[in-house]
Length: 164
Image (cartoon, rainbow, N blue to C red; front, side, top):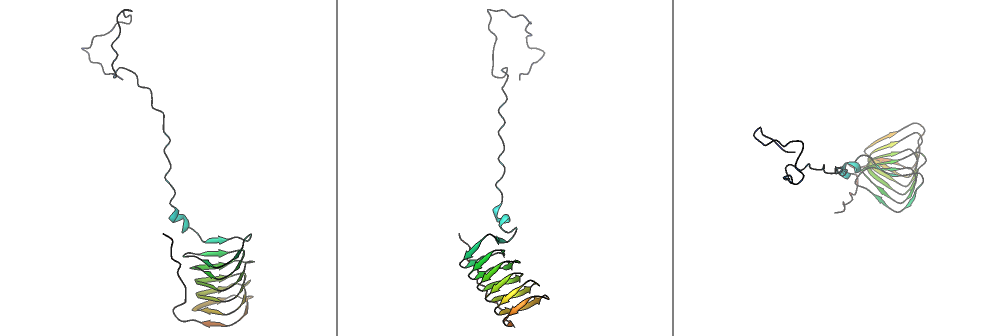
């Protein structure tokens, strides 16, 4: 775009064919630049990780120890010990091993031991083993074949070192 003042010479609509026009960069119409798409900011994965528990779906069967610094939900089968902050064993899930956590909720089956500050055994729970707890809630219909005993104020929950 160019700016004109009143004092500028006005060109007539008919220009002489033999006289070239002055072309300056300011008078050349600039072609619009192509629009560059703005890249969306990368999602914050740290908030996505803490959005919910890690889930072992009902289609999975795991053999080995599970350890997490966050919550775990088991809907499938696990043969091995489980360490987490909050551990939920869903209805229809099976665990053969010990379960450690701040809170352990059982709606499925555990053959082993539960060691947690707070234990919730729902009406569909099937527990074969000892339950060491500070606080326990047992709903009507829960099955327990083992001993329930209060633990010390310090439940042995082994935190997992976060990878660098």
